[in-house]
Length: 179
Image (cartoon, rainbow, N blue to C red):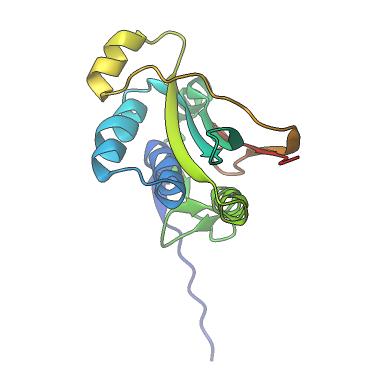
């Protein structure tokens, strides 16, 4: 006789938000553990950070690619208010050992392929909700205003991806032509 056991684990929405961005930054940039913990995670915990950007630059410091993670805090908070603070980690949607959404995994792989094929280097940035006092948040998170991005080429591809099981997180991916 054969028995099949199934089990479902759950994780908090906020933990999963932090994890998606943390993994993406670790897999695409040389961000330090200190910056992950004391800047990104702290800014997300406080619901100050709205977007995290990962840029791909060529040797002329022109931006050739962009991976954006945008958090819709209103949607997130409505899920919490509705009693949906946790999410079941169904293996069809999550790489369970890493708590990584399959959409994030695929976007990061595509971005990294583009970086590797074109010998690009990456940098990350974050932006705040419009209601956040930027000077105060910068002082608390150790950030400063960045220089404007210099864009190169025409859009080669642009994609917006909503996570099936964490819809308050949206991924934007833009790649630029080299001609």
